[in-house]
Image (cartoon, rainbow, N blue to C red; front, side, top):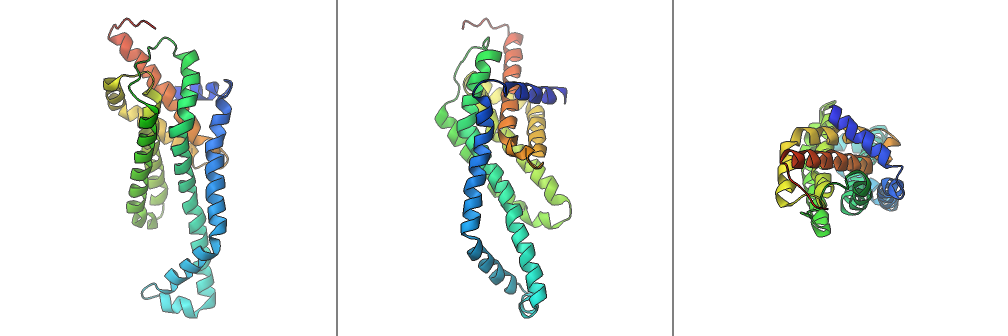
Length: 247
């Protein structure tokens, strides 16, 4: 837990570096703008669709359709559900933008000052970063859809959301944190050896994603924490192997 917290303290310190703070903000702001615009523009159609789904429900659909007050309550719950569903979608979009674009740029700036002693073996690439982020998002969405029935159990939805978001964080950000410095073997070996710690970093980021206002910065801050955690682990790993590096 100490290493996880230190990685976030280091990430917060990195925000004072020139050009880093902007990359903390723009992915979430852009994702919020895109999905808010889409939700507003399609609101009428979505409510019409929701009304149709509610009145078509077996057993209770006919009663809801014939009772104005009950139908109104059901539609209000549907509207709340739409807004709640938009929040993880916004986070996923922001996480994709962070992993594919913002984090590699932030990692370069941070590594140049804090990890200049680590040789760059370039085990990853920008194309690999985009592909990794895309696969992580698609897998997350699939798991989210499969877990939806469990959200009907009180309290379970929050636990599922935290676990899935923690998984998404470590799956999406670990590649970018290592791609410039690790070789092909280290890209796979380090995450495997530090799986519990990486999940802890992802879980703390997931918790921040559920805090209003803080969630605006959670994806990028979590990504920066992964950079510090994994590059520190890479430094220790190479020192332990007694490798003499020429930079």
